[in-house]
Length: 247
Image 1 (cartoon, rainbow, N blue to C red):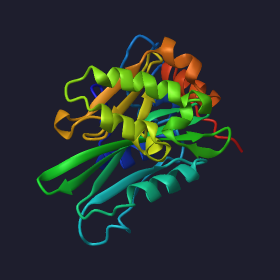
Image 2 (image 1 turned 180 degrees about the vertical axis):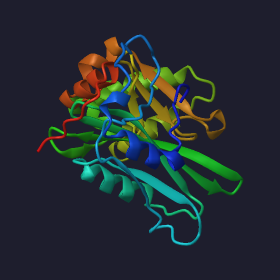
Image 3 (image 1 turned 30 degrees about the horizontal axis):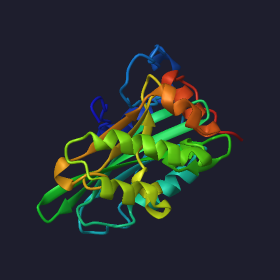
């Protein structure tokens, strides 16, 4: 992702511990609505935020799995642990960034680096927590159930113009309900309210074409959003420095 602000997790634990309880260290909230980029945040305002280094599912074969534990959003931590350790690759390294952490919304993007026959590869996914409903919501949950087909058509239309476009692969990945949620697992709002989808190599185009990124402008995506999606969009555009995850 172009303007992805990497969180150096080796130092993050110490940073969180020193900054989470200090209101004086909070940077001012600025108007972020002009940018069409998805940016990450370092939510030092979350009291008790911890980074878990979870190696229990990869044993002694190397690698590291770092995931966040947000107080009040333990279900998100459990989901992250279950998802990123599913394959248990030897040498797999998993890190994370926060996309949103304000209001009643938490968004986390994971980066998985894993070995392949020709070197290594990267895979990204986003995970969302609804503090109002107290549950984890899949990325596609930001789109209304009855509007998913319309959103898929917009994505397919944007993909057709790209080098390496593979209409058959995109159709199989995006239109089959079984595969759709797995393919559309990396969605996040840009600062101007547009919805950005990123696909790993081979998911919607020929593998040689690399990663594919599709942006659906705010005006087009607005009528397609679920109630949760509207809340995520609002927090991405106008982030605050407080988190309310319910009681």
